[in-house]
Length: 303
Image: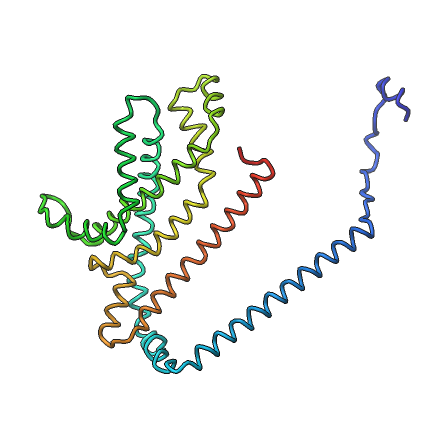
C-alpha cells in the first residue's frame, strides 16, 4: 500500500491478516559473545570454588594440627554439651525474637518522630529541635552496655511508684533508647536527601507543610534509607543478647547457665551459631535490597 493510499484513509491492515511473525535471528557475533560470557562465568565460578576449598583446607589443617587443638575441641566443640545446651538455648531464643519484634517496631516509630522533630523548620520549633539533637547525640555516644546498666540498675534504685523492675522490660527500654537515636539519624539523612524542589513543587500544588512532609518527603526518604535501616535491625537482633546482663533468661543467659555447671564453653558456641543463622538471611536480604535500589536509581526509577 502506498503512502498516498494510507493518507487517503485506506485501512492499514485487514481483520483477517495473520499476526506478524518475529523473524529476528541473533547474529553470529552476538551468539559468540554470549558463549564467551557463559564460559567466563563458569570459569570464574570454578576458580572461586577451588580457591575457597583450598583456603578452607589450609585453615582446617592449621587449626587441627595446632598443639592445643585437642583441649580446645573438648572445651568449645563438645557434641555432648552441644546436645545438652541446644534445647535450653532455643527456649531462650524466643525471648530474643520477641525483643527484636517489639523493640524494632518501637525503634522505627520513635526514630521517625525524632528525625521529623530535627527537621522541623521555623524558630518556634527550636526547643524541639534542640531536645531531639541532644537525645541523638547523647545516646549515640553512650555505649549500649553502659546504657543497659544505667537503666536496669538505676531505674529500680529510684524506687518510683508504678515503675517496673522487670529486667526484660528494662533491657528492652535500653535497646530502644540507643537504637532509636541511630535510626533517627538514618531517617534524618533520608529526609534531607530529598531535593528542595520536591517541597516547592508540592507547596505550589496547594499542599500544606504537613501534607508535603507526609505525602511527598517521607515516602521518598523512607524508600532511600531501607538498606541502612535493615542493617540497624540486624545489629539490634544481635544486641538483644545483651539483656542477659539484667538477668533475663535469653539464649545467651541460657548458654551461660549450662556452661557454669560444667565449665565447658560449647553452649556459648551453640548460641553464637544460632545468632549467625538468624543474621545471615537478614544480611543477604539487605544486600539484595541495596542492589535492587542501586539498579533502579541507575535506571532513573527513583527520584
